[in-house]
Length: 193
Image (tube, rainbow, N blue to C red):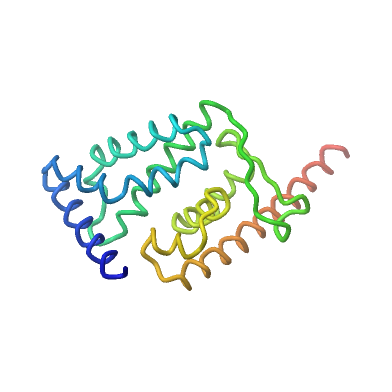
């Protein structure tokens, strides 16, 4: 229910404030309130249960180590997802694994992009052109196969905002891919002349 989410957000914010104040025990509350979401966010990216658990644990170690950089009153969930995303991408780079990234037929002729290491064009471009919340929404929808409603509940955003941010993110990414394709073709032509 909406009331429960509001209570959870207030509890999470109190835990983050306590953690910033030096109360290490508050990390348990942060973990309890967010670990399921963090795990289900990184699992589809990594496609490896054990590795996802490791990344989840690394996320909370990093949260504890970097708690002073968290701005109270902003989205703790998005902050944690950013840490989780960076850790997951680092693991992908180490393992150099290929993961399909399906944006549907309106995005690319064959509809499939590949994420391997962090240097893969699509993920690099997404990291460059999308805001953190847009990136998280796209990853959760495209890779995690969450419905917009589920993403809205997890991120505590209105459904309309999630839908709008997703559509906007796809437009940004599509334009960036088209711009990069044009640039790639221009450079290729210069190399052959």
